[in-house]
Image (cartoon, rainbow, N blue to C red; front, side, top):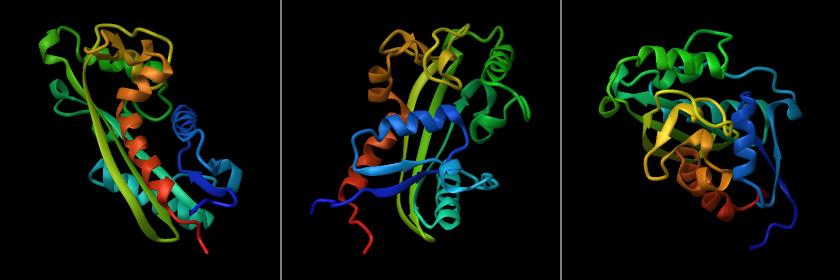
Length: 205
């Protein structure tokens, strides 16, 4: 059954880098993709979940409830073994309120100063959820394994990308092209599953 008109799809994020990447990963789909500012949602919800998937679900439900639209939310983060799994759920708040991506990367590298390469293992996680009204329609979680580099490399992507080294390509995520990153990244994989779901989701009556 073909969609005869575009359905609005709200991406629940106030992070400019994440919002840009989410839009890119949904390019070519027959949805009118909107951000919170487009529909007058002024602030994000409190992220009180105990896992990435719990936070993704609560955010999707929040944005769907605030807007009355089909809403997609992503909760993601970087977990480093040598830091006991941190920053993990607190990746976006690592370094405190107001810290920039560069600030967080510097702090991460400081915390890992002197840590041997074989102990610098890290995992990126992306959990994604879809809700309409208060109904959860879809959820998925994907990971990618890598290492924390000794210094930032590359100017692509955002967040921790310049310090996340991906051994199969011999580059950090900050050095990957968009196409390379989309194929292997945590969010690229979770959004591939999301695209499959959205492609078969019937339009609301």
